[in-house]
Length: 172
Image 1 (cartoon, helix red, strand yellow):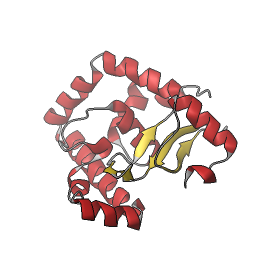
Image 2 (cartoon, one colour; image 1 turned 30 degrees about the horizontal axis):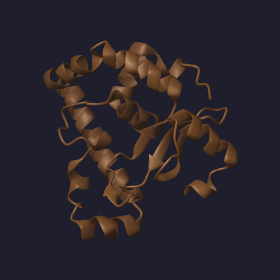
Image 3 (cartoon, one colour; image 1 turned 90 degrees about the vertical axis):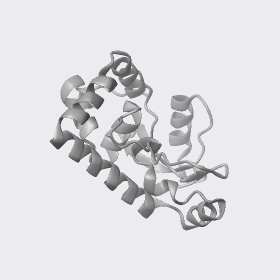
């Protein structure tokens, strides 16, 4: 979906959430039952540059809550658990694989052709959730949670269990 296919109300909400004009939006990938966008699906090529992040968290309320969690050191804690717990590591690896597959399926054919022309196509097999190449690292809880809202993500599930993000009231 290009910006012109978003309703004016949706586009205004997204602009307010991001604090800028959105770029590369394919569609609203997740929204609250009240219709407030929480996650945007983005193109794989934005301004003629590769953009391996398929899901972009746009909710300010979720963003602020996750910032606090990241500041608390939870990212390093969960990365340590990934290294130590086989089941968690395997689930997280599967999440990356599913993300890569979904990104390929969602990729616009013209973006794919241009990425191939630019020599970037291989990156899209290597980069998992949030554009990360080290699949045992979390790097950004925002990207993990955005993926969780749109698919299957063990880190997002743990965030909901530990911090009840799924119960957070989302405002415009």
